[in-house]
Image (cartoon, rainbow, N blue to C red; front, side, top):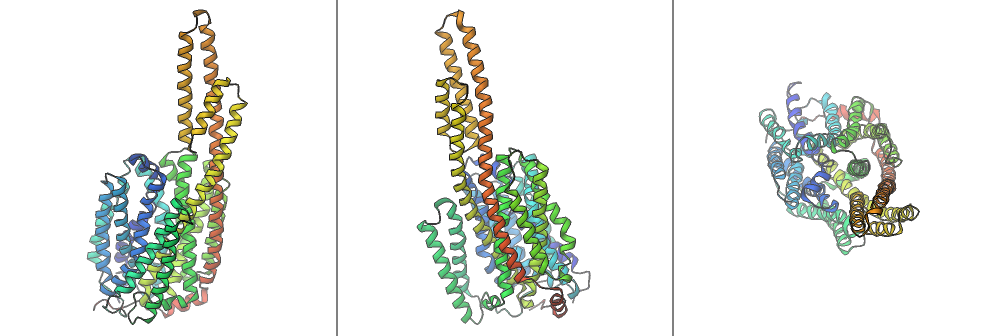
Length: 562
């Protein structure tokens, strides 16, 4: 075993890559409106900037872990770091939204080679008595990095061009590569053969792609679409075929017997719920704050950062899971996350920013109590040489949960938005009809409102259109009227303009209120999912007595050489 202090530099080296890869899952969220405007695209298309990363990450993850266990974790980790840095630069210089989506997919592929390898990579350097602390550290970092993403992204995109959310990876990645080269030894899974399970890798990759892609397409074509149904059915068939093949394979890429441990299986289901909850808060809130609240990206990032601050504050307590057990940490974490998400459903457009910060801090406290205990439990519930594949499954479950979350949440939001906007439009027309405007202006205003497609920006545009039409009418009337009545005409039109501007403030509030109601329904759905996650976290949990037994029996000193 290495000296007791020799594990510090390997942990730092791996942590840099781990932080960088997970940071990029959320750093783009707050910048999405700015990227949308830059490429003049739509919210449906811009969501692929996140989705492409998640698809590539989820599809390649298990294969990357298997190759790392077979041919060297250090080798795969370094390749992943270099590829990630190159892809980040390419993202920054992308000249079209299609290229950005492509390079984000390459980033996701590289992240799949980084994230799940970190824990097994450093455990070979870690003394047995520090295993729980190191495992907890990476669990905590998973929560902190994803929570910090919106803040860092907001600060960067507000003060610099949005491309710098990708360029920031360059110094981090280069430093990580240098430290890995200098301080980390090569390691393998000593039970893994050199034989590549091509059939298993191909089937699981296709199956995961069909599942994640199908779920992400739901937001565009709906659940009943032949494309979505074909993807989901194909994925299920593929997974069943994969299980059958792997159960008979002497050298499987994924030991399916791991799932015979009901605690391990429950932990992965809990992660699916967590993925949905994370998307509910961090994906939707970025748009809510910038569109409904109308605040800047940096302000949105700072507000969302309150969650990461709470996560960091709770981490010293969460780190005690390696002593006190993971059982109640996970349950309490999911319940707090659920309460916070539920309370987001009561936020109104004129709500105090500090009220939103307070709710997000509840979410952050819950997040901090989930990641570390859950990651410890999943690692300890499998044979020690399978730590790599367990770490990979941890990430796969989270990514699939995020994909499910995006699919369900966007569809729900679109459905609720359509209903709320129709109600809002009816209310706005009623307000126009009872206003003091002339009948002619009322008709033109109602015509403009009918043309709108639910967006506040279009509401402002229609205001300008009506004011321009009013100006044109005034000019025509002044030209055709004698000088004696022109002063009265001008006075009438000034009054009309004032009435329109005041009316539009009322109409804008109606739109904001109904958009907020659409978001509320989605947030409450997320709260229910997190409560379900709490049940599975309880079934996955390890009490204090069993935790001491696990730590005492573990010896992570596996072969450093082959």
